Each structure stands twice: as structure tokens, then as C-alpha cells.
Length: 187
Image (cartoon, rainbow, N blue to C red; front, side):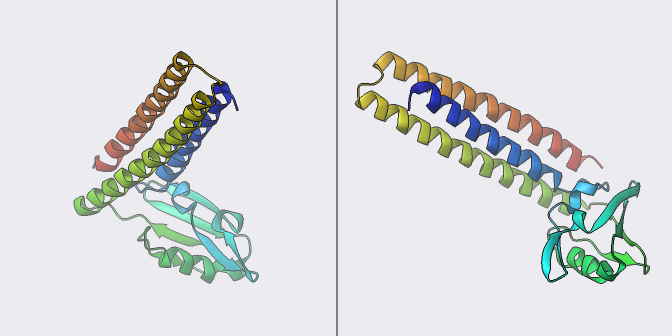
């Protein structure tokens, strides 16, 4: 493994952590209905666990309303109970025999603070992942230096490249988090 491979590997891991964080942001409620709110929900149907979006059509006919239309009406109860039992959502679906409607209640200030707290936990988890990738890369670079495959100057340049990339990814992550926090706290 050479220094470019080490850098590319670290950069890829930083990007993976940032992408995961972006996906996690979609799951946080902001007080408005969004189809991505239900991305993590799975239902028990046909003897297996399947994602909700593969068993139904999810739409937002109004700002505070989600509408779920199952492909198979027999899955109506399974979908409603999967949404109801998902504690992180805190939603109460209502079915009329054909579709499920989920009214998104306005967020209380306490609930907003809880969601902001979840957001900060997700930021910290992503940063921990990035720091782990940085540590691995620097350890590999240190090994190259010990094996005399790169010199001290090359090692320091590689370390700077890795640190610069991590700083860049961290600032992108913080921008996303700041925008989401503003979205959550806006009444």
C-alpha cells in the first residue's frame, strides 16, 4: 500500500460516514410531512420483513399529512402497526380500509429539543467514524515510514492531506447539521 492508496482509502471512509449522516438526517422530523420519515420502517408481510416503501406508495397530500397506499390491501394492518410501534417516529396512523393516513402533529418545544439532541448524537457518531478512519490511515502511514517506504517529509505531507480532507468533510457535516437544526427549531 502506498501513500496515495492510504489517502484514497481514508477519503472514501470519510465520504461514507458523511453519506450515512446525510441519510440519517432524512429520518429526523421537522414538523412537516416527508416521505423519507418512513424510510427505516419495515413491515412483516408474506412471512418476511420488507421495507415499507416496497409494500406501498407513500405520498404527502398536505404539509402535515402522510398517506400510505398499500400495494396489497391485506398488509394494511401490518403497515399501521409497524408505524405505530416505531417509537422514534411517535406517530399514530389511521386506516380507512384502503389507505393509511398519518397526521404529523406539530412539534412541541420539548420534542424539538429532543430531536436536536438526536441530531447532535448523529453528528458525534459520524465524527467518531471519521476519527477512526483518520487513525487507521495515520497508522498505515506510520507503518510505511517505519518500513522505509516513505520518508519523513512524505509522511508529513500525507498526514496533512488526510487532516485537510477530514477538516473539509467535517465542515460539510457541520453545515448539514446546522441547516437541519435550524429547520427543526423553526416554528
